[in-house]
Image (cartoon, rainbow, N blue to C red; front, side, top):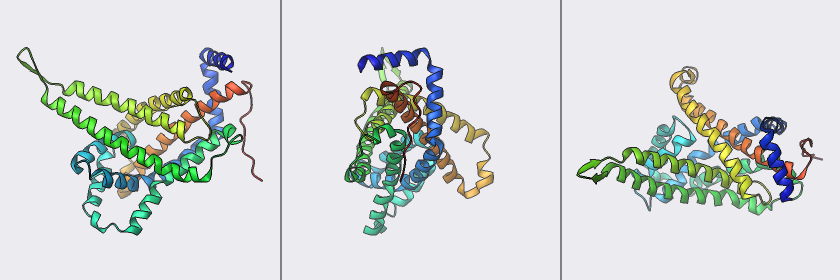
Length: 300
């Protein structure tokens, strides 16, 4: 099997255009844009309840102002150009946290998991060759979103501590040969590189956990790098577009924030699922002929 995989890796290296074309055709056959739209819609429903739950828990450990500042930095990656609006709404809600009852709390827990459930179903369609062989127990699928929410909460706590430390170091600087040297520039570069590494780590973990079956770490890392690089390019383009060319505020008025966030989430979901399709095509290259048709799910 290792020899076959090496041969296919060599084939892809010699014919990258053909591999990309086959991946795009498979992504279209799997209705990738439709799946991305569904993931983005449920992500829009989930993002605010998810952030509220995480901040309420972590604010018992970290000061709320520091936590919201770190969250704003992370949201610049997730929803370019709209992080401040989300953080402001989140801060307004937290000022009235006393009104949160058990019904509202359970409702937020339910809605915060919807995006992960839909993402798992979308992954099942892309990795249909795995689903045909093995299916996941329904209890595991039910618990998986909440395990991932816990994982994201721990990740936010780590990011908060690291970013606060780097900002403190950058603000204080160092004394070198009697001169004060500012470290704000290096601190920003380090924070960006750590953010990019964290981005690749999160995407890789999604490709490891969400699809059915036991994936290869190498394949998951491949998909994570592809999706991260494409999203880094896309989010900077989105920030430039919404800041200079977009007329979305003229068309949608008070709905502008929700529409822009939905567009950003749909682009992110599209690239996330395309990275999964890259992994799926590479796996199929190791098991099936190069020109094998895309497998389909039959219902009866």
